[in-house]
Amino acid sequence: MHKPVFFKAYELVPREIYQSKTEDEIFSMFSEGLLRAIDRLRQRLGTRITINNWKNGGSFSQRGFRTYPKTGSQHCVGNALDFDVSGMTARQVRNYIKYHEKEFPEIKRMEDDVNWCHIDGKEHNKCEGIYLFKP
Image (tube, rainbow, N blue to C red; front, side, top):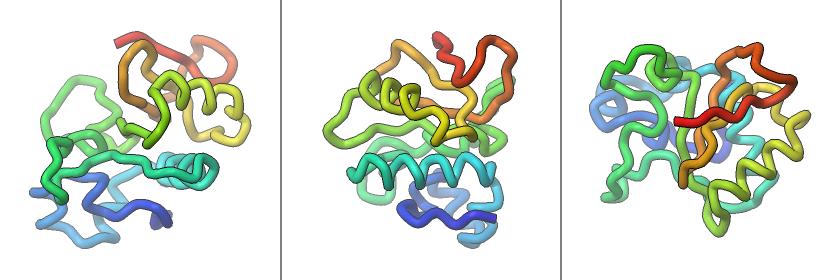
């Protein structure tokens, strides 16, 4: 199990999960590769990454693990994250990841043409490297 260096458990899950599980239980809900990738991205970019911000009064609570079911959602199995990067547009972040994709082998797909970043580890056979998909 990977314990993220740059992220707290409450940033990854909604309030009800945070209040009912230990930190270790929360981290074990996620793909280890995904947690390593988001930590590595934060380290490389050197700026704040916001996943969930409900604990600080923000409106995001379902950008990591999601409690509402959606068929096929990688969020519901701890294999996807949505986030924003301080000082960068979503397109700039996606371009950075694609340009450095060998540094992020755990990231298999990214959502394109949205104003947030979505990464996940779902395997695909669409192309070599990271697959950009439309919502």
